[in-house]
Image (tube, rainbow, N blue to C red; front, side):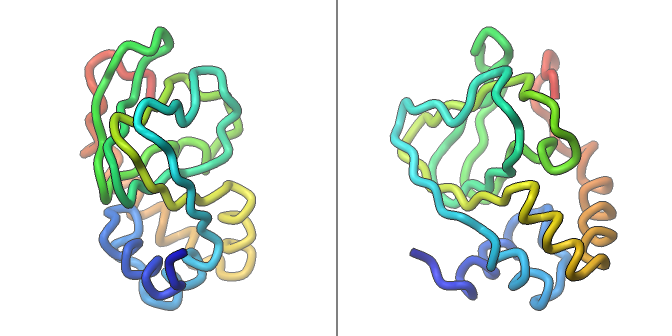
Length: 144
């Protein structure tokens, strides 16, 4: 189990959180949950209820379309499932672990809790998210 400060330092290396101050990072780190997955294990499938952001601490994850056809691969320091922070729609894609993986996850309800305690985090996250959204390429047929 990672310490709070280790989680905060990890968050600082993730593009979505890289510009937040230490106090904000610690508030978010406090709400993160660690999840282990084995190689070949599905994280979720298309149509699955979306309520969690996945930050890859270790491993490689393949994002797939509705037919589970590969779209792209993500590795340590990258994230997926971010759309679940902003809507409650079922996922339009799947995620499969290509190797053993460790994720730090943030649920939508925890994010809302953080925002209610410190609204400035919402503004910061939205600014960072909107700046980097166009940089995230997930393949030409990506439903994301």
